[in-house]
Length: 414
Image 1 (tube, rainbow, N blue to C red):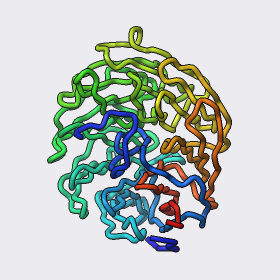
Image 2 (cartoon, one colour; image 1 turned 90 degrees about the vertical axis):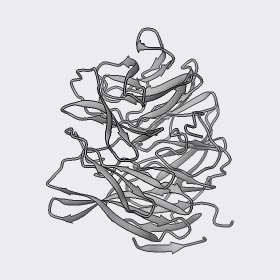
Image 3 (cartoon, helix red, strand yellow; image 1 turned 120 degrees about the horizontal axis):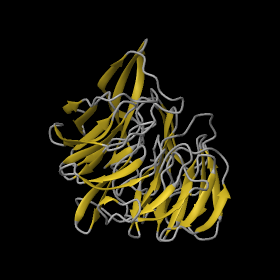
Image 4 (cartoon, rainbow, N blue to C red; image 1 turned 30 degrees about the vertical axis):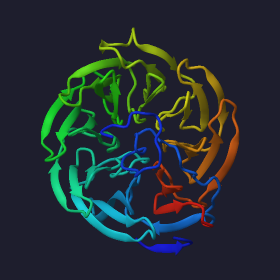
């Protein structure tokens, strides 16, 4: 990594928001993208309010995770013809300097991925003094926060377009969606040693089985659920046993990428390609709940890739083509739909009554979290680099990962 400049130096949390804390997984402490208590910047450029900018080696769309004064990221680095090093690195939060950069797996042979994907797209997850990294079927591992490998595991299925979904932790179990072109299953690993505790095949027969979603761990009436979207259906499993609790069908949906969100008594799930739906499901049922617990659905300008975000009683989404929507969570009523320009893959972030939509070319549109549309600002890092990774939040600053750099964005005057 090359430094360019420095301007200045519970078991489960089940609410839709949280106060400032370490950002230990995809979409933060609740896995749902919102943080309260943070006063994030609303204006920046490629120089203004950039606390530091550091060059990154390799290509990856995993988001940063943060604990204490360290930022952790995965990357895939070319080390030879048809040879990749799948790596984990630690970056100093204050300066952007690399503390260490270690190979976890080596990938040999040409592996096809989608032009918008990378070989290191899943985001790591941190608990206590351990970090769990996942590279799809190319390897899952647990390391210490100093980079020492504790265990490794490989899960066999045939990916289509590469890897994508991140792991989730539910008590002592690491839950991973494994949706390939050949078989689709959800697996639970013992977080202490990587051994397989359970393997639940999805009871579907999709025309296109591949999907890339990240489980969301919730609690409903005292029962912990791992909500795991896939092709044709979303399933909720008991993370201790892998037993199916409920399912909701959406035949034909595939390449499901968004992570669900939970609040207002409902789970909100996007159904993937070709025409995405947004479903609101009451998770208190059992068995096939498609006819009984599906409360509403929307099919107009819903996202293929970005996850939804819930702020209070309103749900916010942005379509891949740049149409943002504000939706009444309980009823599905659309308060507004507005074109915010750009194309979108990253999931939105919310803080201090604002929603941050980051497009694929380094522009972030900030809007008010309100029933009437109001654009607050539009900010660009001024580069030609792609920006598919979702934000991480540390205190009052944003961590933005572009194709070649990691930025820390905050109030440079403080």
